[in-house]
Image (cartoon, rainbow, N blue to C red; front, side):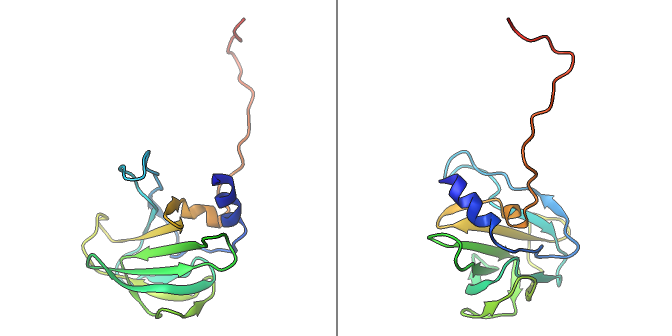
Length: 156
């Protein structure tokens, strides 16, 4: 299942939601569905920073959740259920139902209390209720490689 989620994310043409991009808190998935973790990445974004749609899609939520402005964009033709990107805290510049393109300014980062000292944008990626690393959209994950180990005696 995870492989299917990964492949769906890798087929989307995407861009960074804020420019210049600076990850200040990486994705750290929880060990259990309700366990502690960081279900997205935090990008440096002082209040008023333009927030861009990471990928093309339709705005499916633009409103308040627990006092924070949240924007959700559902990406078409990705998987079933489709991938969704989330952005918070923001002041949305688009409304529900709006079709957006990758890189289009859709919000500004909000000046609300945050766990980031100088302000940040929390960027998330979900399929249904499964959280994924949004950096997968950017194809930034380098492929795994096995390297030779020098100076280690092999067992046996």
